[in-house]
Image (cartoon, rainbow, N blue to C red; front, side, top):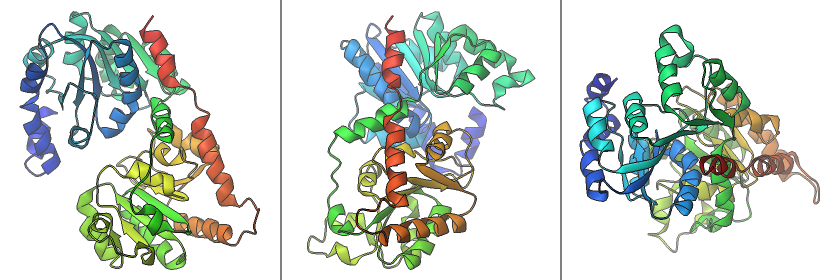
Length: 408
């Protein structure tokens, strides 16, 4: 795997960043910690897993205020985003490659008391080294599914390593727990998904975004969050069909901005609004978000959200960030690692589709019926909006469940 990454880095900029960044990891922790410093360590593969693990890390820090905090990432998309934001870590860096010498040097730089990885990012030399040092090791929001390596004949060694080295698995679902127990991983409980805890925190913060009230006015707003090509195809169809509706598009990658400007030549960029205070944003139908970190607040203004990643194998982006604000969510049906998506659909707070044409037709119908609804009438849009919010708010406090077990 390491060799493959180094080869791929020759043609992929993100992978190259990860390779270069790992060369600095040891220096970062040695500058941040002494060998005697007690440390809480969270490892997250990427940005989504970081958000998922953060509520647990915050609560652990409250219980152990004297401990320092380390956050490591595998993916550049996680590391690059979080290092630019305000965060609680004393050190943040890439996880070194899982080679004995590198891991031993890294781990020996501090005294890790509690380590947890989020969802399913396992590094075996790291786990062995931490276990040898008597670190408490957990998996938060664990998710096992069929066809993982652990369930193949050649994967028995990997399952054994997890059994030997991880103290407890906190599973998202009953199915995940049952699958894990089938391969001997019995130190586990079902605690739910900590992402629900994370997004519920959004309701207590200030979600104001400059210029969005003026842009939206009294019209309905559809937000396309973390969009890929297929979601943008939906937007193209709807812009023509719903002239009285506003659209905000936040691509999954800012490199898509030039492409979006070609698709929507009459759109306005979010970054241009602060430079043009007298601009009448209400005159524009389409707003392209070309800034990082706005999306979770932008959803609070939405009447409906289309969330990207579900129309291909890249993976569905976070639908809960929208649903928590009573916003129904539309997405593609090519997902297998997102049980919350099936549950949101079952709660009638979201809907998935095979193709963008059908999705666009459904959204058009829903929005037009809402616009034509009589005063006092509960439209289908209002109904599914309430369902979305109720679904998120009804979920258990997973962080509380996890902390009770860890702090026994």
